[in-house]
Image (cartoon, rainbow, N blue to C red; front, side, top):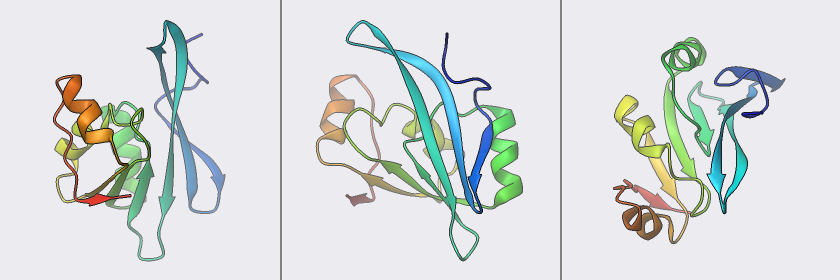
Length: 117
């Protein structure tokens, strides 16, 4: 099992709310499923909590919903995909949990931060 299939696609939960199940990653030697939450704000902007792997097809689905304007790294574990999302959506504001920037740096990843959570 790689995750909660189908992966890398929007799954509606409620009006204006979707889940994205991403591929499993290894954490402490065990497979760990990844999941993002997308919320369409009242102004039409998209808020993405704990972004998973960004694929071309997922980016196309998101574009049909609205502009990605907020990226949330809720803790030091959920930052891995943020750089790819920042590259795809440079206008998005990045909200980062304490410790996430330092943790990413230890892994050789530069994590952009506009605001602390």
